[in-house]
Image (cartoon, rainbow, N blue to C red; front, side, top):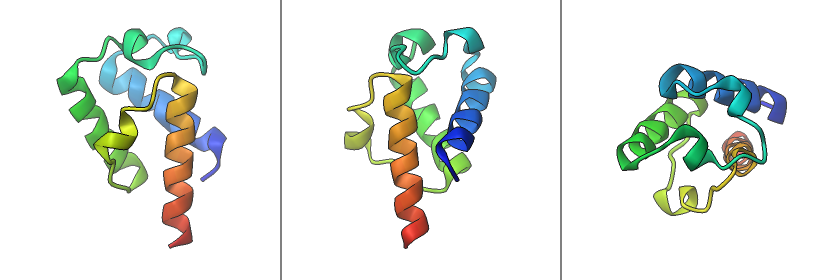
Length: 85
């Protein structure tokens, strides 16, 4: 899975699951404020990520994500690690 596919899948579930405005999802946008995420939303996001990409999310890694680009890079790295195993 390449970065374009990851961005497409990610943006699709952000719009569907979190009712995000597609125009507001840009690489440099702050993910938490754009999606208006609270702690329960983060739990939902972890479940959606695990379902869509097939890896376990470690909470300490997820805390470092600020922008959508950070999120895409995190998922791409984890998917690549999973594919190497």
